[in-house]
Each structure stands twice: as C-alpha cells, then as structure tokens.
Length: 126
Image 1 (tube, helix red, strand yellow):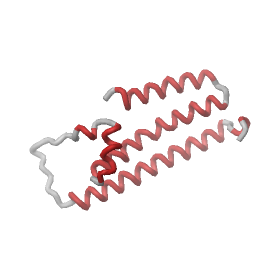
Image 2 (cartoon, rainbow, N blue to C red):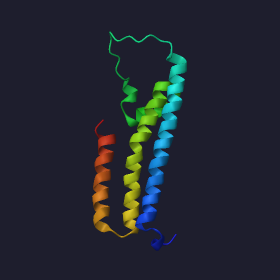
Image 3 (cartoon, helix red, strand yellow):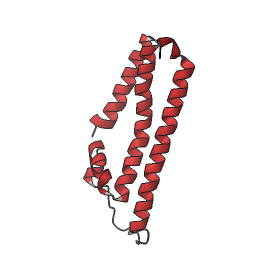
Image 4 (tube, rainbow, N blue to C red):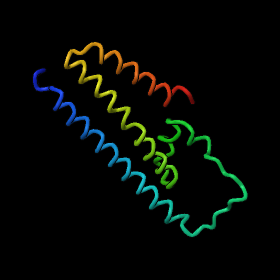
C-alpha cells in the first residue's frame, strides 16, 4: 500500500476491527475458561469464612501467560482478562504507526508518551 492509502478513515476502520477482534478473542478465552472452571468446580460449595486471594503466579503478566496453558479454568480466565486489557494497548500502538504514516509528528509524540505510561502501568509497577 502506498502512503496515500492510509487516510484517517482507513485507519479508523483498522482500529475498529482491531478492537472488535481483541474483545471477541478475549470473550472467547474467558468463556472457555469459565466452562473449564464450571466443569471442574461447578458443584463446590463456596467458603466465605476465609478469604483466598489470587496465587502469586497470577499477579504478573508473565505469570498469567505461563500458567494459562495449565488447563485450569481460573488461569484461562485470567489470560482472557489480560487480552482484554491488552486490546486498547494494541490500539495505541497501532495509532503510533498510523500517525507516523500520516507524518503527524505531534500526535506521534503524544501517543508514544501514552503508550509508555500504559506499558509501565501494566508491566513495570508489579
């Protein structure tokens, strides 16, 4: 594609499709994790007398990704939620590329700052 093909309308369409795909994939992963969880623990009686927090491996991005392929429903659900969080981050990253293609330097700089803050809050604060 040439540079002229990337106008505002085309970028908006790609971003919209990116967001729809991210939310759809996230919903499918969460749903599959919920099915696995309910098949294994659907008849268990809840115990509300003792608080059980999330295990340490589910408190970081790397831990969620590492445990997601264990086959446990809770881990799969966590991966789906992580994908949901990553969807707008991917949108911002794509927007940087779109602004670079349009040669809009001011919006490129601002969007890089926003992406840096998002990535730090997701990866660097834990």
